[in-house]
Structure formats: structure tokens, C-alpha cells
Image (cartoon, rainbow, N blue to C red; front, side, top):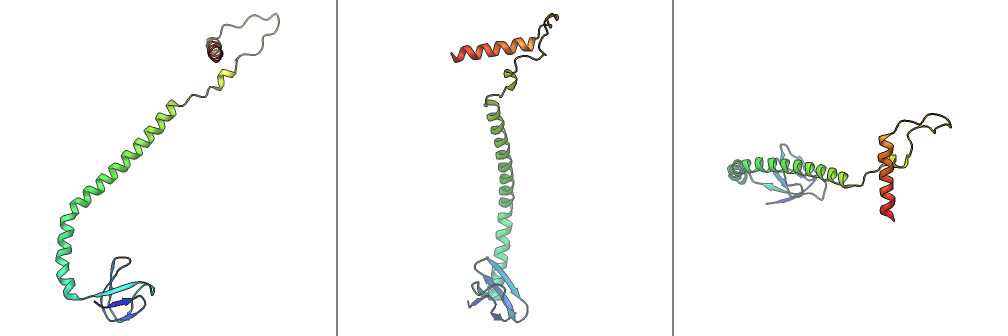
Length: 139
């Protein structure tokens, strides 16, 4: 096979480019596409006529495998996406909760002298117990 480079004037025919693995058809005498660094080989028509049925057979044989590979890849990507989200949610659950309300000791306004006592507040009582437990654990 004769070797040609890009931008070289060639006769009509079929040319194979090595770098992009591409067949290029030249219908009229003219330059090959690409720069001077791209290498082309002229493919004789008899070779192409002999290879065409073999390439078609390879396509027919491997087409189902290509379909299965695409389905498995899509399923794998979705499984990784779901697994990643589950891992993120799992870490979020295991992370210690931020409880800024524990620093807020009274939910009501200060009691004025002589005013009746406010009703008991279950939230304040529970918060006070949590704070007492935290203080005793630290000691």
C-alpha cells in the first residue's frame, strides 16, 4: 500500500487514516483532509470488496454483545449513583446532630416580680435535663 500525508493531492479512491482510524473517500482528484502529520494509506477496491462481507459479519455477530454491554453500563452507572446517594445519606445520619436549641435555656420572656408563675414548659424541662446530662458526662 502506498503511503500519503494530509493535504497531498491524490487520485479518487478510498484512503485509510491511521491516527483517527477512519476511512476517507476522495471522489475527485484533490487534497486529503488533515495536516502534514496525518498518515493515509490507499486501500485497493478489491481488498475493500473482500473485507466488506467480513466486516458486516463481525457487526452482526457482535451487535447483541454491544447491546448487553450498553445495558450493563447504564445499570452500573445507576447503581453507583444510588449507592453514592445512600452512602451520603448514611454518613449524614451518623454525623452528630447540631442542636443550637440546647444553648437557649428559656423560651419565655423573663418573669416580672409579682407576676404569676408561667405554666410548666415540657420542652424547657427536657432541654435542662439534656444539659445536665452533658455536664455530668464531661466531668
